Every structure is written in C-alpha cells, then in structure tokens.
Image 1 (tube, helix red, strand yellow):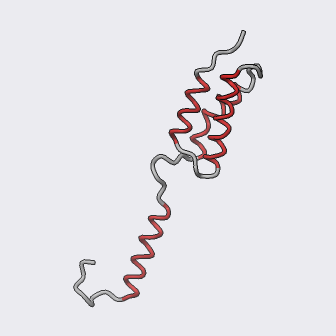
Image 2 (cartoon, rainbow, N blue to C red; image 1 turned 45 degrees about the vertical axis):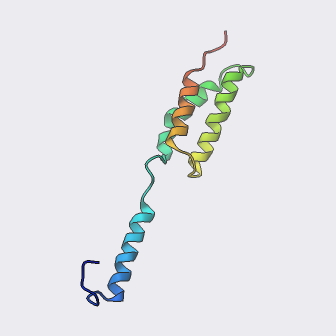
Image 3 (tube, rainbow, N blue to C red; image 1 turned 180 degrees about the vertical axis):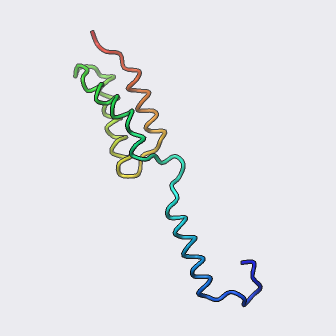
Length: 96
C-alpha cells in the first residue's frame, strides 16, 4: 500500500492478500476456549453425577455442564459458559 501507483504487481498484491487471509483465518477470538479448558469442568461434572438423582440443583447444573461441553466441542461455546458451569457445579452441596 505504501508503494506508488503502478509499483506493485497484481501477483505481489495477491500474495500479500493471501498471506493476510491465512493469518486472519488462523486467529481465534479471545473468548473461545480450547478443549483443554474443559478439564476442570469435566472433573466436577463426574463428581456431580455421583449425587442422588433427586437433587434438582445438581440436575440443572449437570444439564448445563453437558450442554457447555457439547458447545465447546463443536466450536460454539465460550470461556464464560465454562466459568458459569464450573461455578454452578462448585456450588452444589451433597444431599445427606
């Protein structure tokens, strides 16, 4: 772009545009998690699944956590969703 008019060939422009597109396509928005970000959630989820089935709070938290794992796995979940699911599972109190 800094070159005077007519100083860049179409081939140079195409190469630069192609390189730029490759970098843009490889970028990941900051709030999109990687699968490794699910580790704590998955551990808490397994623990929650050991709770009695009649625990409504646990059932809601488990359902949400399962949904978050599916969403993250298909690329549409966010770190915020994982954090919310982790908070819900950590807040569970075992029934006596």
